[in-house]
Image 1 (cartoon, rainbow, N blue to C red):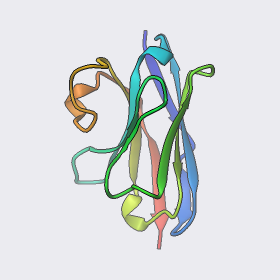
Image 2 (image 1 turned 180 degrees about the vertical axis):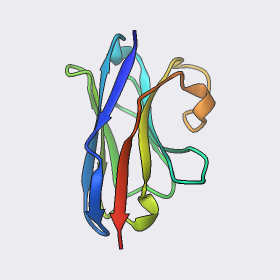
Image 3 (image 1 turned 45 degrees about the vertical axis):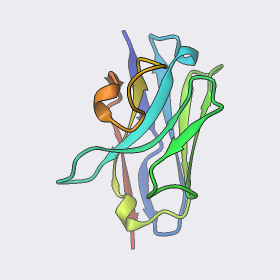
Length: 126
């Protein structure tokens, strides 16, 4: 079965960096577009970044553009999110997810992703 396992979260001071990883199994990872989302307490889950199956197109939320970088290593079945210049408002649980269709749906909507990891907590202190 499809499994997505995030890691790399933690506590960091404002201005610091973290790199999240998402290890995928049970799927042909290189065939799927993938995304990162986050959910802060009391808020809805929101889009952070997405990347095409080939790795040659990336999409970002305005709130993280220029600070976060999504990437993937298809040989290692792993998705990454490099987060720099972190702010307290970046505090959330971060999830990776699989987008089942390359040619339909939106990169920005949670409902267009079908498999999700369990999440990893990122806490940014001021």
